[in-house]
Image (cartoon, rainbow, N blue to C red; front, side, top):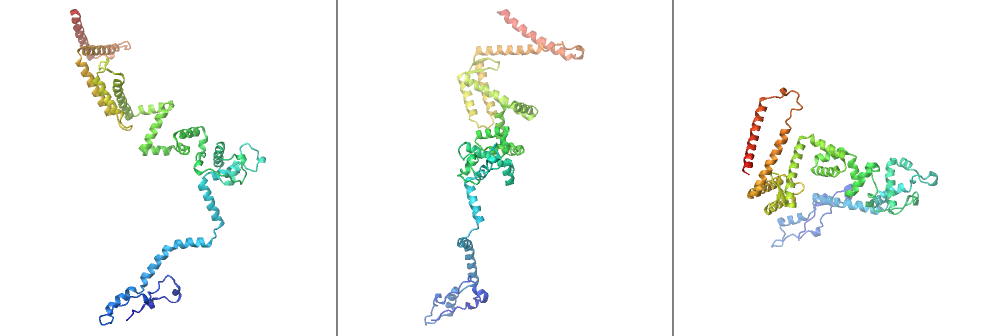
Length: 416
């Protein structure tokens, strides 16, 4: 049996490269499959060549495979090197430990440093090794206001029994600290929170269930609030609701808003339209709630059952509208439908029809009387300045119309 010979020996690096352990070893000869033999017991060269070449060492493929293996193992080797050394610089250990403490306790870590180092207000310097907030800030390289914010947060927490009082702490002393999420309940990151305005904002924010810092940040940057209102419909809607809630207790804001509306044509039209919608809804609502309806002539009559049911149907549809849906079209449809039924009810009742016409006549007569009473020349020194022929003609026509009405009424009177 003829065995394939490994002819890749020349490809093995020598010299300096011979020590490179990343180069794959040649395929052992023993691993090469036996070549096929012919029927006569002799090996055919054509059949043996492919079998041998498939198992020969390929320099390019082996190096690529080795590089891939090395790339996958690099990170593990780095971790193993760190573990094998067993030596971590003290500065790194200290940083990691301080990071862990802050991760668990948050701002309490720094508040403790202030609480145990800064003496309470009013305490003489000679009675304690602690320093003033100003001195502590100078040593820390920050402002005294920042130090006092941490001081006040600790003070509030101490009053609630969450942390020890200042007097119980000594410089350098460590105590068990609350969790980090409790910190935001006591710390206010903005000095404006201490003012009367800031306290009002803080109280309002707490009533709304949000962090005071967010509300204070918005209050300190009105330009940012304006930009958000202009750009975002949701923010604009929230601002509108807030203004409406404030109008009742802020007459200055109410007057200013009214002036802005009056001076803006689009707003005046919108207000007039909304007012008309409100009147129509009120008309329909009273029919449902009171069971009475006002006729076109101003009479109040009992609303028929069909009319009440129709009014209630329309009103229920309007009440189901979402807050952001316009009710104008619905109110107009309800009003027109109800008014039609009212007119039909009046016309179907002869007695009611007579009462309605009488009421309408009196209403028109009262309006005409009031209008004519306003036609006076008491304030005019010279009638010649305002005189026009058309005035006389129209008064004469009015006089004739009045005479006709008087004659008609007198005829009825004579019959009675």
